[in-house]
Amino acid sequence: MASVLPASKRSMRSDRNTYVGKRFVHVKNPYLDSMDEDILYHLDLGTKTHNLPAMFGDVKFVCVGGSPNRMKAFALFMQKELRLEEAEEDIKDICAGTDRYYMYKTGPVLAISHGMGIPSISIMLHELIKLLHHARCCDVTIIRIGTSGGIGIAPGTVVITDIAVDSFFKPRFEQVILDNVVTRSTELDKELSEELFNCSKEIPNFPTLIGHTMCTYDFYEGQGRLDGALCSFSREKKLDYLKRAYEAGVRNIEMESTVFAAMCGLCGLKAAVVCVTLLDRLDYDQINLPHDVLVEYQQRPQLLISNFIRRRLGLCD
Amino acid sequence: MASVLPASKRSMRSDRNTYVGKRFVHVKNPYLDSMDEDILYHLDLGTKTHNLPAMFGDVKFVCVGGSPNRMKAFALFMQKELRLEEAEEDIKDICAGTDRYYMYKTGPVLAISHGMGIPSISIMLHELIKLLHHARCCDVTIIRIGTSGGIGIAPGTVVITDIAVDSFFKPRFEQVILDNVVTRSTELDKELSEELFNCSKEIPNFPTLIGHTMCTYDFYEGQGRLDGALCSFSREKKLDYLKRAYEAGVRNIEMESTVFAAMCGLCGLKAAVVCVTLLDRLDYDQINLPHDVLVEYQQRPQLLISNFIRRRLGLCD
Image: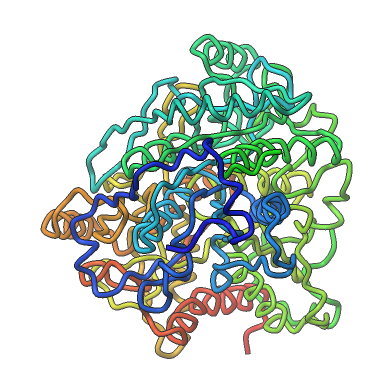
């Protein structure tokens, strides 16, 4: 397997590097290894058309997020932060043959967009996990970085998820398999969350907390917004719902964390969710931050993950 | 309101033009009209920043589909088919300020991408329906064009949905509102489906049928695929499930139709779903068509909708 760092950086690996043993990605599908070819349709990659171990074997950190532009910005940022001597134009979309997802790689860091909502991230995760399996990656940490609505906390706060809950504040993901409903755990890696929280303390003026994240199937009615095309409840009912969420430990709301936690957990990937909040839903429904504030908030999860990766690689000053 | 056609084409409107009366888009939200400003966040449009009636008031046909590239190709195709004298480079992404969705307009036709899955299309539909409301559009027909997996029918067949059903073959969409589950109807416009079916008969070598469409929350486990990162059922259980779906009237499977039918129905939009099938799921799980065949199949819904729109506008030869 290729080194995760260029030769010049290898000596910088320190004791903080926590890679011990080899933790491979588990696919839980008895049919997969007997397939002659595996076409990762929505990534426009495949086992016969691409040398996946050569392309991805050195991946140690996978960062996923909804927006293609943000994932490209993150990859460029990581390239700079890891001081990898490639030109900016070398960051190319690896999935250029499809417009479903966008993927960028810089050194040991893979950045992929997942679109919005549970079904969209679920397709990407199935194919990404198979990709990591085919590429024989080991000791992979996966982090979702995104935006969210906060509950009872200041906009701009970064929430590290301890557990993802559904619309009923339950720590579960209900997966329909054929016509059965199977309930899966949505716990995330506790040590990883704490490591990320510790990283956040080293960044000045960086409000961060660990809390529950609520994952919903839509942005308007399911999150109690009064500004959708459809709204059948009162302002009081909305506030009652969001306050009950707060009392249950929910500090932010987004649309992907339950299935992300469930699938990564089942496949042996150490996973975390780090989202910045763009507004306090107890006050507002619409996101109307000035552009520069919005941009700065959206960079916060990227900054935290960059610090975390550099620490893990022993690159911190 | 601006004419739907350039002056030179107006005389071509025939008796086939079925615009009678004015059917406005209903938003069902008592709070909306009292809002000082409505920011359509994921479309990067707003009531204060954009003159929505001037930009969109003449829209009569809205076509939505998952893939941005396909929606752009459709807009370019419609521009040619409607013989609108704009240069190709005039087709610009109206939502260029965001990478969540892509939107193109040519004459009375609006084409928008919606990503993959119920949550992703649901966000777009909330904002699109508000857009049509703010723009005071009337007599709008909305059609989802997409790709799907077929059941027991030849790949390349175009399925016009009569009713969208969920994973349990029920004609319903379950919407979580706060923490209640509300069941909504998923019926589509019968006359519109038949009109589309009649259009299909005029195209040579164009296999088309009307049937039920099953809408699932994921592509792998929920559609009985044996090739995901997770698979806990046997080949026999898969085939049993798909055969039961066929017996219940399901002819294809995709991931957006139930919420599309439910929301359009509630908001008074005449709606249809037209998807081509890329494989027969009784035979295969993976999509491995040669590129040129895949491209030709994906164009079929576009060709049908173009014929339909031209007939509606009295532009058929």
